Length: 101
Image (cartoon, rainbow, N blue to C red; front, side, top):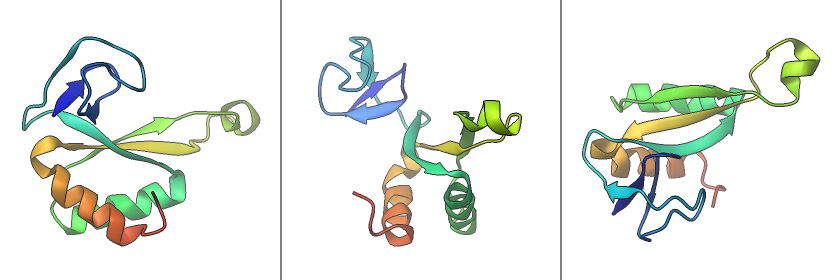
């Protein structure tokens, strides 16, 4: 599996399908990979599920139009997990949000 160091996503391709970077590397156990991006409320819910199941994660805010309208309010979060816990995290994501693709 390849890992894009720019967007921190996993791909089987040799070129990143999201940012078109060519500097992909083989993913390592410690690499943090983008699990999902969710609205603030749902992200917090998923973070609690990950915490309850001892899955390490990092959540980074994504600022959008609300930044201008609400003075810096976070609209969404990107949640990253280490590749060593990827399969477990994906399982939990699917259980928590079965309607997601």
